[in-house]
Length: 496
Image 1 (cartoon, one colour):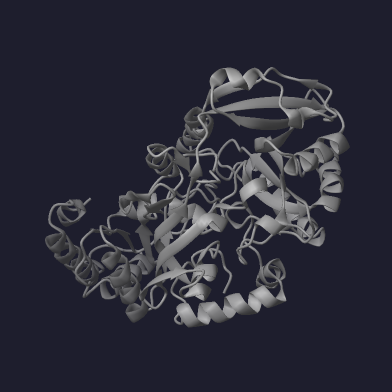
Image 2 (cartoon, one colour):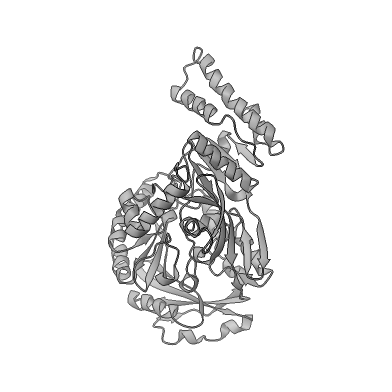
């Protein structure tokens, strides 16, 4: 790293950092002309440096850090899929909403693409941008309780911090993801589902208000009643119309303890129908299922929990267990609510840190298509390749009300989360798993399924239109033209 880059990366003097950055690029651009007579340099590299020198000149004043060193740019050029690598020209670590406004305005003026990135938990490059600008949301991470039932969170706030703040008032968000290190802005941009989604829909269904910076660089407060179209086209909108800079979240009373029970099945029909039955039963809190394969045998595990006020209540047999058709059951495991929320955080963080590719595939299928699809998966080794964790959980589409968080038609659906694990990036097994996902995609769509975009291959333009449906597609496209007229925001999903 050059001396000017080291100076630029320091956080204490942002004005000096910006000046140093511009001088650095301009100096490189000039130096490339001089040195071509002495050394044989890569002309593509020279053109890139010159282009960046022009693009990054005349930066507006910023409160945060503006980073152009290679390490910073490469750190946001990958996600959990470890397949797609797109290197931006610069990274902004904002310290204010004004920084986001300035940066989007600047991108419009310079014809640059821009994307907001949280923890990089997507797997197909959705939050990456080649030769553009990545805004690292993690420096905007404030969480504020408004009153007992409302909480404000900036986009880089972690869901674990949100849960801890809400717990001080005995409250919780109705739907929580299974990894507390994910960011609020990240999951609200894609939907956000959890083990209570059968009761409360997705996380986007429990948002009261947003502050958004549109693709035109305009800060707007929106809700169901105020600037409603921007509100609905931002939640689960994959960053196409605006960037979330504040979310106001609904809270509900938090349980003190969770008593989880597991039920084993040999028969897929009983497994699925018992899940369906529990979506309508009184009492169950968390609800999920899992397909397990070992030694050529397939078993199905239903996990269901009760929220209880005292630990010893977890041993009581709940009324909702009556009539279940499981073959066997495990004793209840009762734990504090936080322990339940945090149960997977460490393992997921370890998996990401290991840089082992996770070519996951997540989709939701109509009830009638779920059993045939599972049968096909379990009988076709090449499409089951590398799956180490396979969850199947019931969803009620009517409770998922945000238009861009697409669900299958019908009263009942099942979300299938297929987690694969490859040995190394671009290894033969990694390529085989990616091919398996590509092969499954048309089968899922033909069965009436809807992909969960951060964990699915990038759809073609025709597939995106089919995914959203004719009416929603027209609405989404009109919102894109209105709120991001120069199409500077979030090119990674390849929607527009």
